[in-house]
Amino acid sequence: MAEFESAGRQHVREAMERAVEELGVPGAVVQVRDGDGTWFGSAGVADTTTGARRVPGEALHAGSISKAFTAATVLALAAEGRLDVDDTVDRWLPGAMAANGYDGTGVTIRHLLSNTSGLFATGMALEWQRRYSVRSAFEAHRFDVWQPEDALALALAQPPVGRPGERFWYSNGGFSFAAAIVERVTGRSFEAEVDRTVVRPLGLARTFARHREDTGFRGRHPRAYSKVFLKEGARPEDVTPANWTSVVEDPDLPPLDTTDVNTSGGWGAANVVSTLDDLIAFATAMTTGRLLPPEQHRQLWTTVPTEGAHWLANTRYGLGLYELTLADGQVLRGGTGQSFGTSTLVMGTADGSRTLAVHTNNDWATFPLFDRVIEAEFGAAGLALAL
Image 1 (cartoon, rainbow, N blue to C red):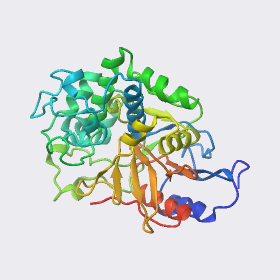
Image 2: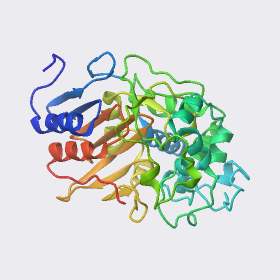
Image 3: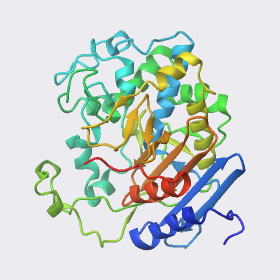
């Protein structure tokens, strides 16, 4: 065991080692903070070429955990009296949603942050799929810069999946609209407001929201690896539920290094870089009410059901974060994030007494690891994709 590894938590360590040995995960790290302090464990490698180990303090792309930073920023502005979560999109961005059957006069900020706006799943947009779902296309477009107006157009590229408030449907685009509202309200960049309202108050020294031109990290970080692609020559528009297994690429192909990539297409939804330490501090503040006043904290954790949305089972969604009910009835709070070659989980008890964070430097076969780690740490399973 390396000198930076913590003793104990054998079941957590076994879950990581199984993920590396059986699922092909390049490297995994788990960090737990509770009344006894901080525990850290790792398995596998940060770099498959050099064999460098995973270590504490690595910079990580947080994926969709970024949504919680957006929600926190909006709620902080609400606490300052600068907006209301029941303001409509048209209140701040007149006409911005007037496309493809959407109507910004009926969609509120609360709808955007709770994934109940009626927006379709942005990642299924054909333009997104054409750029990133095949290896050669990904290589050609990995450094594409998405301007805010591009991200908003992508969010409206397909018709609504329902009326505002009717149902939960996970959509990155709602958080892009929320980021645009932050900029309209404050006259400052979204990234600067995340820093002012969340990062600095919580002392998250290693956390930042990437500017749209930025592709980097600050400090040591693992390489990222992806195998989630269609076969070369496949057209995303031809993929159906009946044929998709025949058009995904051979799982035995080596992964593609996706470390260096522009994430501006996930503006407001997936563009935060952080560390496990900072994510645990952030999640604990969000679950316990340390960051937000009582009224905004209540709004954050007013949840909606997620059943029927082909999302995560046993969950209810708040504003940018969700509650997970384990098999024994325990309720945890936190978030998950997955992006090009990176997957992250942060989850803990509602009183903040125990919080764990998990990261893998890949984007396949990660949820089995997350569930095994949760079961090892909290004594019961619960996290699974609801298909």
